Image (cartoon, rainbow, N blue to C red):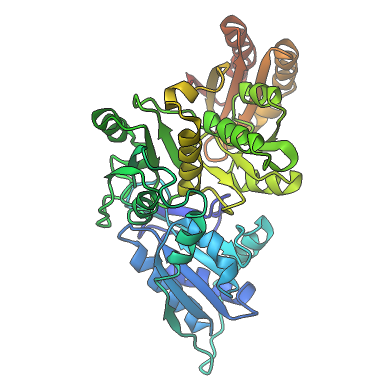
Length: 455
C-alpha cells in the first residue's frame, strides 16, 4: 500500500480509483473484522448521498460478512448522528462512507470506535498494515448477516430536538442549505418543529449534486436567499453534516472563530461551560483568545484537525471546541462536529438575544493575518530547509519581534512539499515585516521553487 492512507479523518479519494475501490473496501472490512470486530461480531455502516456510496457499502458488507461479522445497515445518515448513536447500537465499530465537503466523484471511509470516537493512530496503522499484506482466512461455517435499521435516525432527531424545543424559535426566518447531503430531510424537519419559518435550499440529492454549487463550500446562493427573503440567519452544512457556515441577515459570512467565540460566551453566560475553557486550533486568530479572556474563558489550542480538538476537549474537560474552518463540537450533544447541533444553539441564542445577527456579530475584531507559502521541488528539500539552522534562527527572531503583539506560526504541509509561514498582529507593517523576515530565508535553500501570498 506504500504511503500512509488514513489521515486524521479517514481515507479519501476518487471513487473507482485506488484506494477508493471495491477491492480496497473489501480488504479494509476484512482487516477490521480481524482486528476490531472481535467481541460482538457486529458493525454498523452508514453513508452520505453520493452515487458511489452503494458500491463501497456493498464491498464493505461483503468483507465483514465473509469474516462472520454481522452488519447493521443504517442507510443515509449524517456523520455526527452516526458517532452519537454508535455507543447505543451494541456494535464493535461503525463505518461512515463519505467524502465530506468534496464533490460527488470523491468518496471516503471513516472508521468509528464502539464508543463513538474516531480510531486512534495505532489502531489505524495496524489496519493499514493488515490491508497491505492482504492475506485473510475464511471459514465456511462463519458467515455474517445483514440487518437494516433505517429508523435509527429518529433517536438522533429526538436528542438534538432537546436543544431547541417545539415553537422555541417561533418568529425567526431561517434559510437552510442542506448541500444535497445527509441533512436534506433531517435539518428542515427539526427546524420546522421549533416553529421557525424555514426556507430550504439544496435538499434534493440525486447522487451527483452533493456539495455542487451549494453547502458550506459554496454559500453564494444561501447568502442571496437570506437577503431576498428577509431572513434572520443563513445556515449551510456540508455533505455529511459535520461542518457549518453561517451568515447574518445581510448575507455576510461569519468567520468560524466568531462562532467558536459565540458558543463559548453563550455557554459561559448560562453557567454550563465546563472548565471555563474553549478549545480552538493553532490556526484560529489570536484575537479569539483575547476576547475569551475578557469574559473569563480560557482558550486552549490544539493541532489542526477535528480529532485533535476533541482529544484536547477531553483532556481539559471542556464541552465547547471547534475549527475556524467550520467544524464545531458541542460535546453535550455530539461527539464530533455537528452542523445541526451548532445551528440550533446559535439560532436559540439569536432568538433569546432579541437582536439581529449583525448586532451580535462580530464579537471581536480579528488581528490582521498574512500567510506565505514557500514551495520546494520535493519533500526532502522542504524538510532540509525547515530544519536548517538559519531558518530556525529566523523563526526565533520573528517570534521575539512579534511577542506580545501577535503570533507567528510556521508549519510543514502534510500533503505538499511546502512550508507555510503565518503571522497575526494588529500592526500591518509589523505583520508583513515579520513574515518577510522568516519567509525570505527559505529562498536561499536548495530545491526552493517559488513563494506565494495565500492570505
